[in-house]
Image 1 (cartoon, rainbow, N blue to C red):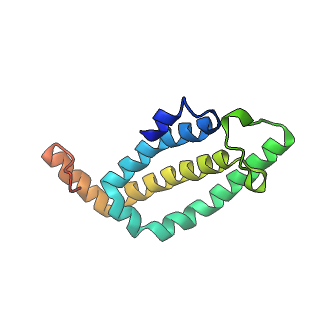
Image 2: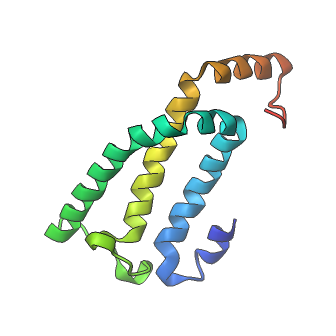
Length: 128
């Protein structure tokens, strides 16, 4: 919520608040339905995510450096570790984590049992 409040008010944080405002509810939803399962699979999730995130960071850094595209400096914090805008790094990390989390939850046997219980009850219980 804070991201959407800050979004129009903080020009240099525009890109970052847009990313946080878009992805935070999705990460919260994944955590709501299966935080314990995500924790149980955390080591595997990070191992799976590392290579795609590194690849995306590298190719994005190369694309920006070569002029393929650019990020408006007026909408960013100006932090560029290793030449990659921090907002781009956050975007690729969170996008990959959303996908990996979704796959971890979708392939988890306990999540299937929960889904069956939720469907029988007709609602998602607060105690998930």
